[in-house]
Length: 289
Image 1: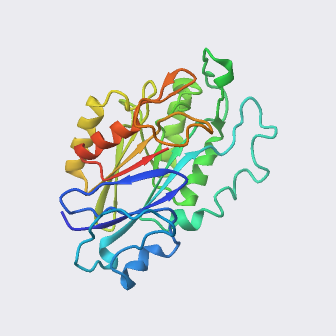
Image 2: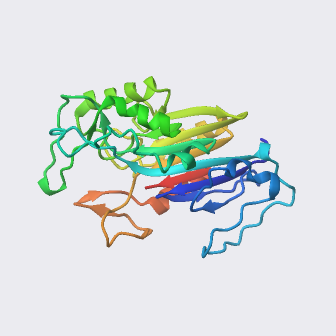
């Protein structure tokens, strides 16, 4: 496999970049520049962001050229409004047309951009999800046309592995996949339906797997199946990206605990343990959100 410099640019999400056999250089960058795809012509490696912690990584001696530098942008949870139970005060006045206006230069600058779609794309109907704890009930149903907002922003891979993917039953799940595919977007995260995806950019194959601790999703808590999927995809791709929806929520849950985390009694998995196992299995970039 060719030697590549992978830059993981993070917009509101935690990222881990792995280094395996010297083929992928670890780099964590908190913001991407719109013209960063061409920065390699004037530098050998990305500099650390201001006030960042310096890690004991060794960058390779050879100079990288623009042809060997690839920018991946990862965005966390995306919810573009909801038409449930009605559209009053829940959709933007311009129908989400400018929702990504400020972020688009960063997203579209990437060779590959990924995000986690928090909710379903469904114009109406569907079977609303029932939960035991009413306090934890939030249902997100976005108009199907909003898939076009994601493609226009510059996304390539969409994770639908999360606790809102089944907010409106199987109908909502199927509608979401159809809407995304209709816009040429690759989605992943649902067992037996869309577990992974692959795209090629500038001669490099990028693989994508999305995982979550929720029913019907590619599993995060029980990793045996997921690790087999990652290993199989690693053999097919040059760079493998994993999107992981995990962990507790709230102001007192801002740090990774390295233990199993829960939220409203729900087991949200151990992202620290999962990330290490996924890297060992072949993942190159992990976005956790």
